[in-house]
Image 1 (spheres, helix red, strand yellow):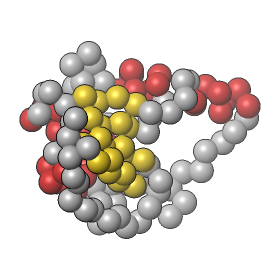
Image 2 (image 1 turned 90 degrees about the horizontal axis):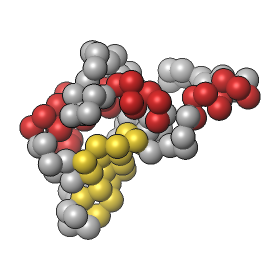
Image 3 (image 1 turned 60 degrees about the vertical axis):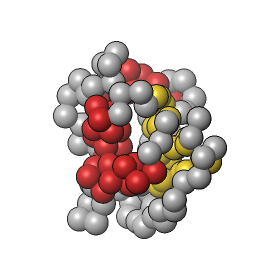
Length: 122
């Protein structure tokens, strides 16, 4: 496997892009929603430079299933940066594996526990 890309949505305002080496792991921190300086096209261009074999999106498993169909095409036009960039990359490179990373049903757990997620703090 050449590269493993983890799109960790860490709410970072900036990011560092380095040339990935074979067998390496690259973590890209993004905002979930586009801004003037960073959007789905920006992220797609980064993916084009890194050429990942695997893309892991920080998405709840249920949300992932509701976002992508079995061919990893978007079921709807997402407002979030990561699904749009990943779907565009998958369309061009169909051999790329796309999956989620997070514990199962994270959002349901948060709701049951009364945990509210802060949105767009930056």
